[in-house]
Structure formats: C-alpha cells, structure tokens
Length: 79
Image 1 (cartoon, rainbow, N blue to C red):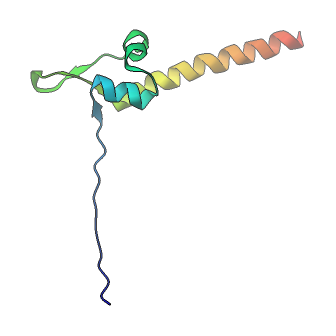
Image 2 (image 1 turned 135 degrees about the horizontal axis):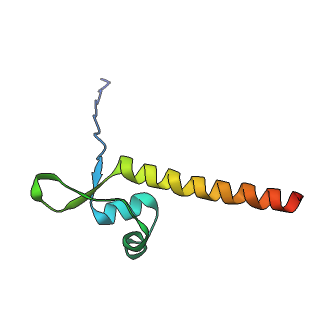
C-alpha cells in the first residue's frame, strides 16, 4: 500500500473582529465591549479589528494587577 504525505500550512489570524476577540479573551461579546480598552484598527477603511498582540498586552496588564493585589493581601495578613 502506498503512503501519502499531506503538507498543511495554517496561517493564524492576527486581526480579529469583535466577536472573535471576545472569544479569544474568553469573554461574552457584551462583557468584552464593556471591559476591553484596546483600540481597534481599521485596515483599508473597513470594519474595526482587534490586534491579538494588543489583546495579549491588555490581558498581561490585568494579570499584573491581580498579582499585586494578591501580594498586598498576603503581606497584610503577615503584619
């Protein structure tokens, strides 16, 4: 029996519409629109898109705030 080789190249999207961006961040669309401060980009004058890199940066900023609050809470309990 002959063996077949299949080569696939998958290009991951960098720019996401609002629904995709909400899903990417793990939020419902209505919550995403209310919470997300990330500015959109209009490529070619078309509809607004979110850059994944900007979304990642926002998420990292949110995580840093949680870590700082956790550290402060721990230090407060030790005092």
